[in-house]
Amino acid sequence: MQSNEQTSISPVALVTGAGSGIGRAVALEFLAQGYRVVLAGRRREQLEQTRTAAGEDGARALVVPTDVSDEQAVRELFDEIQRAYGRLDVLFNNAGRNTPAVPIEDLPVEVWREVVDVNLTGMFLCAQAAIRLMKAQQPGGGRIINNGSISAYAPRPLSIAYTATKHAVTGMTKSISLDCREYGIACGQIDIGNAATDMTQRMAEGVLQANGERRPEPRMDVAHVAHAVVSMAKLPLDANVQFMTIMATNMPFVGRG
Image 1 (cartoon, rainbow, N blue to C red):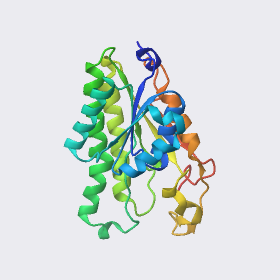
Image 2: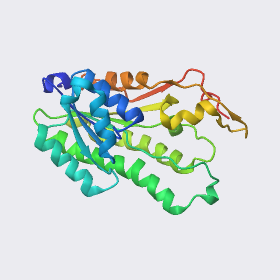
Image 3: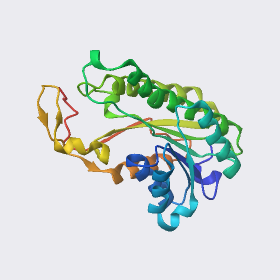
Image 4: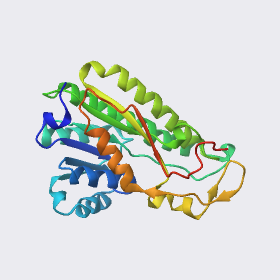
């Protein structure tokens, strides 16, 4: 079985949601480790900021603005990867969105659909396109790493859309891992709890707990997440981290509720 490092002198990674937060941190770590990196996300300006933040390493970054919930946009993204590099070694399937914390009965159906479109359908579309490319390329194979969440195991209050999609991501990860093993495509999932990004600033300020209280929660440096993802990616393809949970040590997850 080929390893990612054996398939190319400079392997190719695609990071969705690369314009901010976890996606940006992971993209920067891939670039620092010598990968050629495709930066995908909805806003070109933020993707360009990620490339700039990489310094000289940014010369190995390709910016492709993409709405992952749009099938045609995903098709065009992978056409561009094929044109530019002819292969893909790693997909970090990261793009996602959340909703305001509201009671289930008050969540508009259109908002539910928007979350499903990005967190679930978007992840499927990117995985599907990656699998097609990884099966056809020479040498074949590659790795898909899905960004799950602590919410793939235990929900936060008032988060039904996000929680349901992240539970579904776990099923997707298992199906891809099962169905693609004969093609040398490994699929794993990283479940992240309270990485310090703009999105989790509210955790530090106080967030609703299962008992109805609001309490601040500890966060961890997002760089730890980036290192974990790239460590998963750099394994030879005959080894796989099926599921990894990385979290702030003292966050209320084990025993939540």
